[in-house]
Length: 137
Image (cartoon, rainbow, N blue to C red; front, side, top):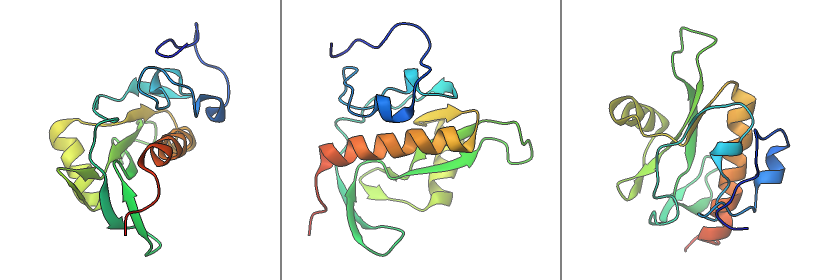
């Protein structure tokens, strides 16, 4: 049922989350493996799409284009942060996006491991891609 997540802690694969509708039409960080802190950006479904060139030099359209970094690079046990690099109507560098996170605290979720962070980032990207459609030319 839309808007209703499964009961109990989520123990399945990230691919099980993709495509489920927890009220926003996007994968829910609430049930993501390795989640330490749920994301605090609430406007994922209403963010404007931005045209940019992706890391492979191809034209792309997106609303998030997430980056991953460790909360405290000097502490190997610190959480891995997922943060958007698209904000204020444009795509920013990874360094700018990390700096924005450190100033505002806005993020898409914090995870125990890089792998868990990247799995959720992939699920979120797929879900947003279905919503955003193909790149605008």
